[in-house]
Length: 55
Image (cartoon, rainbow, N blue to C red; front, side):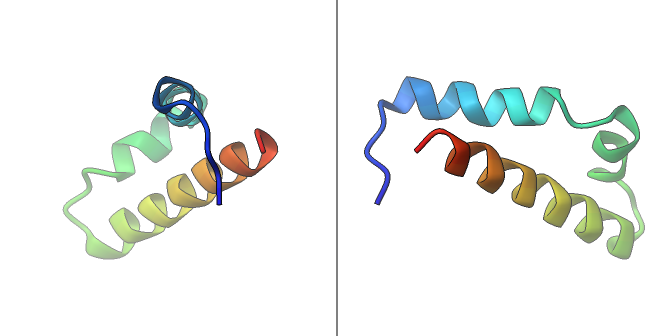
């Protein structure tokens, strides 16, 4: 279990979001469910990786 300061966790998550390519961010609001889900999964994986690198 990760026990990091909430501000550190927020910073890591925000850094992962900021480093996501613009086309992927646009797909997060796509009306096409498949594209949206793919982008959500990619972003979630990026966040998990970023958090695991901090532990």
